Amino acid sequence: MIDANLALLVSFLALMLIGTPIAVSLGLAAAIGIVIGLDVVSLGMIGTNTYNGIAKYPLIAIPLFILTGMMFDRSGVAARLVGFAQACIGPRKGGLGLVAILVCMIMGGMSGSGPADAAAVATVMLPSMVKAGYPRAFTASVIAASASTAILIPPSIALIVYAVLVPGTDLRALFAAGMIPGLLVGLSIAIPTLILSRKFGFGAQESPDRPPFWPSLWRAFPGLMAPVIILGGLRSGLFTPTETAVVAVFYGLFVGTVLYRTMGLRDIYETLVDSAKISGVLMLIIALAGLFAWAGSTMGAFRATTQALLAVSENPWIILALIMAVLLLAGMLLDGVSIYLITLPLLVPIAQAFEWSFVWFGVVMAMNIAIGQVSPPIAVNLMVTAKIAGIPIESTFRWVLWLLASMAVAMGLVIAFPEIALWLPRTLGYRIT
Image 1 (cartoon, rainbow, N blue to C red):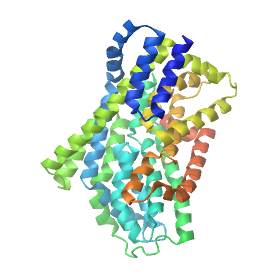
Image 2: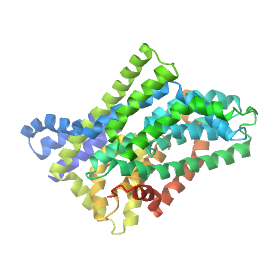
Image 3: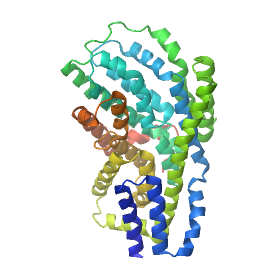
């Protein structure tokens, strides 16, 4: 049995190291573990447990929120949000950097995906920031870091997966818990952005003209209403999270076709196709991760690994530090959803052993993964913005390290003071587990 547990975990790591796609790695490792630990006949359970991995009603929200984000991206919302943010912040050194951060946070409240957020904002902001005197590497770093807030600010796709995988967790409480930490991470990025911009004179060529506030607000108003509809629908109880996703899709379609009139039939078709491709890949990963989790729990691999980790120390802070180190390393290599799927079967028993709040723990995990998405050498968000900027990812390291240090301080505050995350859901009356 020990050999089977080792085979499960080692085969997965080996497949990942040689570059096997994560979905294939999860499925093959599960099959290897089943054959060695159980028997060949048990392979007949693969189909059932693969299906069970995605046969969960709340998961319907994931493809719908992916489609919502793409609808708003194609409809030109980002460009109008930039004008509104410029009207709010005004011309100053570092001003466009703050605009990029603000727009990333608002767009994150529509897409729920860091890489999608990074791509949309970088496409709009990069030309104007470079023209204003910001280095491409600095611009790519700021946008990549800011887009990582999408994993915290609802509707975070990763937090939806977390709520599904951790029984009894209220998704509404999780969304509310991510709000203040998400804003805190945004602030932690804004501070070094301003300091570095003023120290090196970035933005010296920004236009002195400030867009008029009310016309800019009016143009951006439909986009600004999207997070209000999503969060308001959840808070009022008018919609469930899944129903909110459906409403958000149709609102995005309405904005693009009726209000802004930037989307035709071909645009709608391409949006549906692109979101279906992304959703298909993601749901395949979730399905095979469910199979991997079933195999690991059936053979006791996760229980044995958890006991080994708990044997290291009885101090919860030491264990938490080890977990954070592992998650940070994983965040450098994988996307947030994959990290939740792979690590939660191991981490949930540890959180139960130390009686940590699952809502708080989910937010702390999200903050750690957000840092990992911008951490070299393989930073998902940074790869996206560096590609759009046409620069090697190595050129961003000089700037992104400052942002990462500041983001780490924000995460440390949430770890030390859990009420930063738990105050809002507690105030709203949500159940905190």
